[in-house]
Length: 69
Image (cartoon, rainbow, N blue to C red; front, top):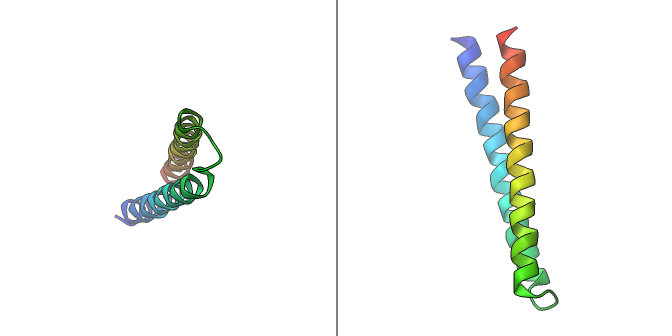
């Protein structure tokens, strides 16, 4: 049971990091909107979200692998 609680806590922390990255993407969108063409801005935001999600999954896998030991 203790490992399950730790896994849920780790997942909550990592999910919070993902939400914070979405907030940063929104802030970047507001700041860069006048200077960058829309198609390039959409590409930047999608790339940032993909990289953030990949890092989230990698960190979650590492945490869960460490909990199994």
